[in-house]
Length: 290
Image 1 (spheres, rainbow, N blue to C red):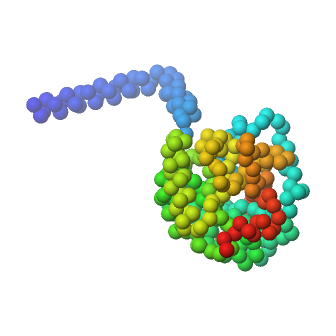
Image 2 (cartoon, one colour; image 1 turned 60 degrees about the horizontal axis):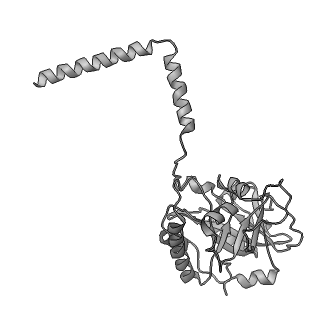
Image 3 (cartoon, one colour; image 1 turned 180 degrees about the vertical axis):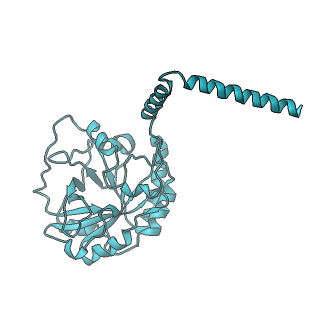
């Protein structure tokens, strides 16, 4: 029986090989199959989960979906130039993508604060966070840290990552939770599941720092996940396309990210996100932890 099975297997393999060769000889078949494979690849949905190193690209407002979601949620109108003339308290937000920063040259007229990326998800830490954290102090800027929230990771795990990374420091601004859709979460949760994880995250960071986090939002993510659940939180709106920020109905803003293409002395690693605070310098300082 063993020899018979071997013979049958060899015969089957030989027949398959002959059939493959016969089909391969049909004119144009090989090229046609290659074209079909390419078209199938183009139609395949994106289900990529980013590795921690690939997550370096996440900056406030720069996930691939943010601009599209803002455009879809905003009122239909042509892009406008932001008018920040009535907001003298200005700052920036940064991450490792800005490269090495010369903090001795950073602070200039009107630059009062900086928020910097600290963590993402449950295990990623910005490689320049510690340097930026001490550098901002040396430049005399009010500073705060932000966490890029991964909708596919438990809220408690993400809070632990942030708490283990960011010092409890007097004079620091409240942390910011950056809510954006991204490739790091291929299948977004329901609002009910998200709100449960969100509550766990907030409870942990409030206990650790004694401050309520700010929420960084775009219009799309707010409508889908935070509408009706943001009372008591100060909002930071991403909206570089209008004269003044368009907010969800019944809400107000504390920070406005009005540009993704700024330049700041001492930063040569690329464009910098620019922001304004809705208030005076004293009001901003009052938000910092005593």
